[in-house]
Image (tube, rainbow, N blue to C red):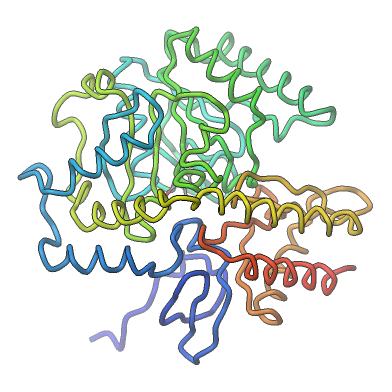
Length: 421
Ligand SMILES: Cc1ncc(COP(=O)(O)O)c(C=O)c1O
């Protein structure tokens, strides 16, 4: 007999904390210590840990139905959730499919695009992260460690340049170079007649918290429209109020053909979804996609309560105000510390890139040391991202207070000072 169960070591660990409860932006550990959690469980607990309205909705639903399988019958929260979402999604995206995780929804989007267009290929962008399943690993280019050792990955994925990685010059130069590369890709490697969709994160997440320059996203959208290629916006990380708008595409004035949502949608209860037009969704043959748990009533209850909280008057304005406070605080620090090389973001999705002051090279080791310092000395939990791990990313719960942003900034500045070489 086994002496006890063990946990798979494949899970990377940001901290050794064992948490027992959480509320808002704080978590409590088994030994009674409190930490300011600025990770939101990787941009998930949009309404904070255990928002009373979300907890109540889940409790209430658990007493009625834990699982009402959508192929077997329709339960009474599915249509209300579709109706609520349709009030928020861009015009025309009024039809929804539900699943459980971001990767699963992304797979669904690719399956839908291929079925609807009868074309095989997909274009993604450098630095993208779309998930950990075989299909979404093939679409992920933010770090080799997400793909290494898992080959062969599914084929038909082509990687276009992202302006984030265009060397030198102005943002306009970078946009021009990246669009030029996209045109090249469509002429040299995957013809429009073979390309089902382009999948893009309007604000790149794991790749470095990088908001796509508006001219780039518009250029991508224009090419999709002209060439009969579907545009898929992966709003898994940047959706549901994170950027101060319900969906990040609103900042850009573009409407994708398919939008992928997850993370913040359920405040931590697993639920993800796709939004598209009814015409497009109708091209998906009945039964060619599905899943045991997608659209389950517990996830729908969590999502409906989350939407109610985020839709409250003034909620998103407050997200923008906290984001502005954060960016201002970081820019102030950057004015006198050249190792804070770049501050960028939208709303409460903010990246602070740490570089070697002399060379401007990404300094991932320094960020690792900063995370440890903030955890131990300030009891603040931060996380990093980016290909070189050098972007300390800010993704607090959307209910974070002015004082908590101040506390985070103080911890960040202290960590920066303590790790200076
Ligand atoms: C933009 C984006 N897409 C997809 C995913 C995959 O989501 P999940 O981890 O829920 O499968 C993530 C996760 O971080 C993400 O940030």
